[in-house]
Length: 108
Image 1 (cartoon, one colour):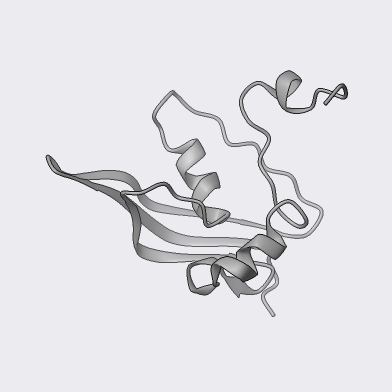
Image 2 (spheres, rainbow, N blue to C red):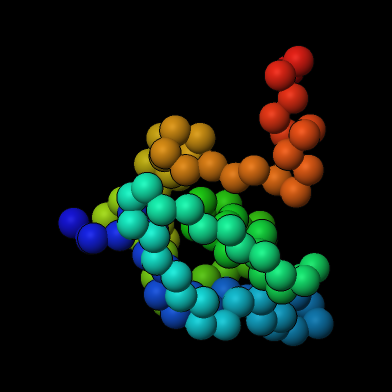
């Protein structure tokens, strides 16, 4: 078991379009131990959301991990089945989107 809850090593992710390859992430690395908190900030289009989506295994087509590894709680995300990922999403790992007031509305 890894000493880190989240361990992203040298992640490279591209989107393959008819116009060619668009490199979205290039050698992203970060790690968190249990109980630590990390905020990812940056300009629009800098890869914040793509990094979070890839850690949850929900990278949109035509995006594809082309290098590195993504580990959560000792499991390699890129090797988990969709069934395994569904058990983790929302229970152990989740995303708060840009407008948290609409995402966390107690009325819904």
